[in-house]
Image (cartoon, rainbow, N blue to C red):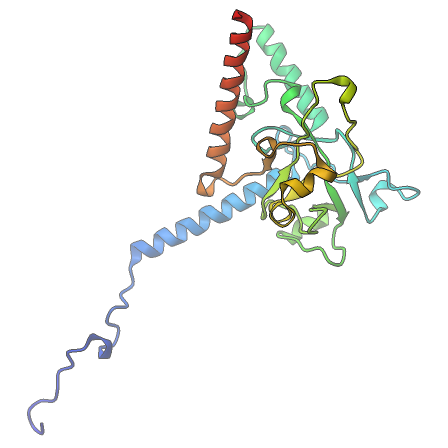
Length: 259
């Protein structure tokens, strides 16, 4: 007390700045992760809006819009066969994808090297599945955009037919691949005027069994995650699962041949 030089605080919570040191390394790691997530999100957006072969914008115009012209319709479903997807969840204009397969086949016949390394998951047309999006006019009331400036380049945007959320790569979206019947007489024709891409949220809310009535028959394991992100290892898992399935198919064929 008085004249003894004061009291030295021993409790760190009373000391200015104590315990709040700026960890530069942590800040850099956080910034790096943020940049990685941002870049991955942009990559997913690109996959959901452009052809993986040509880089050109996908055709989201609704088909069969009645008396209105396709680019004037407020909403609808994209044409059957206009857009296709591969097992890795990449999207393609079908015409461009078929031409790319023909070029690859021709190079193989001529002894040339196959290009497009990340195109190897497509062995042929059987690995390309038709994609039909539910689309609405860009800027329509009730729809929102993850990257709004791109709407000036698109008249229509794809949305989930159940939840209405925009399918722009920011939310998980799945392509429903119907199970093909081996018995032709029992084969049910697929309604190609109905969309076959829904959001993960719709799957959670409706459940696989409930979705069978309108979108089935289909097997959950055959659903394709569109534009899977690299962050979190989601794409790598999809890639490994597909490689495992193709190996199992090849093994099964070899067994059938030897029997």
